[in-house]
Image 1 (cartoon, one colour):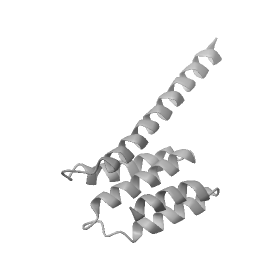
Image 2 (cartoon, helix red, strand yellow):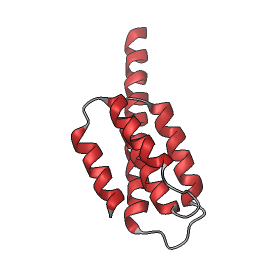
Image 3 (cartoon, one colour):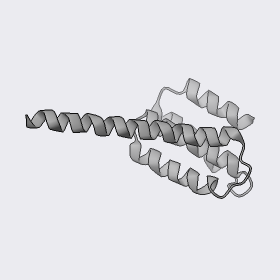
Image 4 (cartoon, helix red, strand yellow):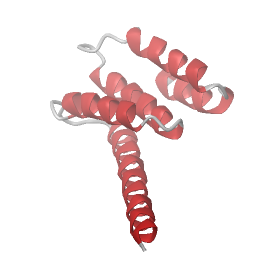
Length: 112
């Protein structure tokens, strides 16, 4: 529950992207990955989502991959953990598809 609260606070109170990411990363460094794998995945997904909001697609993908690597090893995962990961994954692929569509249209229109 405390991690969910910290996640909500981080989404609400930080307007500076670097401060926001520093806060989330500092929380991640305090989590024992072996003992709290679900918390680690949840926070990693939060970091990936923040990076996506700030336009860091490469960082988002890297964090998503790290979270998925742990998530794939877990059994009986809490719904909120799965939801956090798949929410950021869906948003990431939506952004990538829109970017691809935009670039395709721009390239096509610049030729003609």
